[in-house]
Image 1 (cartoon, rainbow, N blue to C red):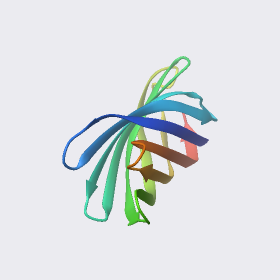
Image 2: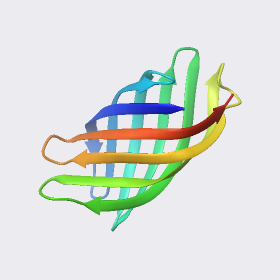
Image 3: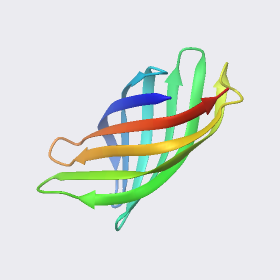
Image 4: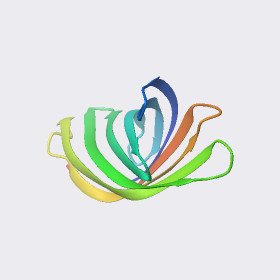
Length: 116
């Protein structure tokens, strides 16, 4: 799998951002990502709604604070479940992204292996 999601903020609290948007690549669709930031650690839970079902999982990584409103992160992910034609989805890979607090946007990229 090689997918990129372009997201916008839909909800937040002190340490959690909920972002939604379109994903493009191997499995294009609509993505919802919950990012929890704990110091320099970032945790993610995600669901991608694709034609014929959905794929869900979680990941974690290291957050790098950049200049101004920019931050980036890199880590690992695991796909743990799916629905519909992806009911037996499993996989793992890398999780990468950027956050822009000035626009409340995020870009998340996943690279790895997926079976279903």
